[in-house]
Each structure stands twice: as structure tokens, then as C-alpha cells.
Image (cartoon, protein in one colour):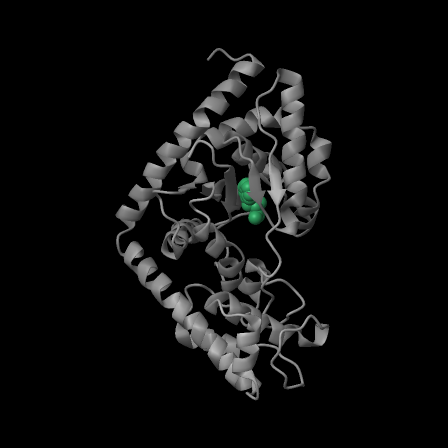
Length: 333
Ligand code: TRP
């Protein structure tokens, strides 16, 4: 493990994983488990910056962890744990709070967007990026794979780390944000001009296919997928063909066939057939994931035990950095 680059990913336990997350992120995380020292954190402390129904949240935390395990994240190779199980995250957040000017947080665009939608804004929502910085910096992370919307938070993490390092001396590694490769972008099935998103999916029934959806649900969404008035089934970057291109991209990601093979296969077929076949490969992909997921959820005690074991490992990996930060600021340790 020692020489591998450390990669930290934070996963919100709100909203459901969909096929876009699977193709764009989870599938690669699973494939790259031997290449990197991967840390996956289900960020429940972040989730409650906006009120969550406690009963639903508890289910969603287990669900997020369970889905990742079912997709093939292997606890022997990767660290997958729940943020609130490791108190070091909250502790380091406090220390970092004290070197973070308020103005930096008030400028964050995600904060501005989210707070505009809230009647009352919690201190936690403003502080969200500092908690995220603590997540990343605790593990001396090299890379943070994030979407466009999180880039500003990575910049802030670097700024906070740099400020701490220059005030108190070298303590934290400066992380780099990595943006997932193109081709990994799956668009909304209802609207192929926007990226498939968990939050849109929770309002818009035909936007995404969830990883836990039944075959009937998969087909109900695919049947209504937006295409165009033409009939050519080809990969294309024309705006008008974005819907068909998206369906073909999903098909390609899940079958591993080449673009030419796929275009030959669909030549002369109708959009209805394309939708049916894409639905079928999705259903085939989800079947073993759902079987593993259901088995895991049968025994919540066993799942919780896996998570608590991982939390112990995370805590012992985080401890030296937290200790160092405490020493640097002048605490008696
Ligand atoms: N803010 C991230 C998101 O909404 C989740 C997150 C929390 C995260 N802590 C992190 C992502 C650390 C990367 C690294 O997607």
C-alpha cells in the first residue's frame, strides 16, 4: 500500500446511486482498487448540514455503503467507512475552522445556491467545505476525484492546507482534484443536455435508472428516454442526437463493445429496439449487484460490523495527522 497514491472520495448518503454514477465512477473505482490506495467515506456529517429525516438517513447511510460493497468495492483492498464513526473528522474540522477566514466560506458558490433555498441556514452549511477539507487532509490525500461542482471546494481545501502549513509549519499534503475522463459522462434519460444527477433523479421520475430499480422500473424509464425525430442509430456529438448517443454510450460502457460493432449491430433497427436492448443490458448488469445487495441487507449486524472494522482502520490512519495538527497549534498532547 505504501507507495500507492492515496485517493479520497466522499459519497453523500442522500439520493440514490444511479447508472450514471455506476458507469462514471463506481465501476472505475472497483477496477482501480489495486492501482490506488482508495478511501471511500460515506459523508453523513455533511448530509445533516441540511435537515434529514433521521429514519430515512439511517437507511440511506447503510444503503450507500451496501451498494458500494455490492458493486465490488472490496474491504480487503479499499477503505470504506462512515464519516461519523471517525471522530477525527469533526476534531480536525474545528482546528481548520480556526485558520479559515469566514469570507472564504461566504464566497463558495454551492453555499450561495444551497442557502438561497433554505429558510434558515445552519452554521454547518457554511462550514461544509471545512469539513470536506478535514476529510481530505486527514489522510494526506493525493487525488480527489470530483465533479465540476466540487472544484471550488478542492481549491478551498488547498488554500486552508497552505494557510495552516504556513502558520504552523508543514503538516498537510496539498491534494489535487481529478475530473473523471470524458466518455464517463452519462446524461439524463429525460433530458440528454444535462448530466445524470442524483438530485434531479429524486424529483424527476424518468431522469435516471437507480442501481436498485427492478426490471420493470428500468424499462419504464428507458421506454420514455428522449431520442429524436430521425432514425439513425449512430454515435454522434450533434446536439440533436444527444439522446441516442447517450443510450449508445450506456450500451458501450456496459457491454465493452466497440463503437463500430455497436453501430453495425443496430443498423436498420428502430429506436424502440435500441431502448429495449439498452434496458436489457442494464437489467443484466444490475442483477448480480442487487443480489449481493439484498444478501448484505439481510444481516444489518454483519454490515455494521464491516463498517465498524473499517472505521477503526480509518481512525488509526487519521490519528498521526490529527496528532501532528494538535501539536503544531500548541495543544498538550
Ligand atoms: N461535497 C461532496 C459532494 O457533494 C461530498 C464530499 C464530502 C467529498 N467530503 C468529501 C468529496 C471529500 C470528495 C472528498 O459530492
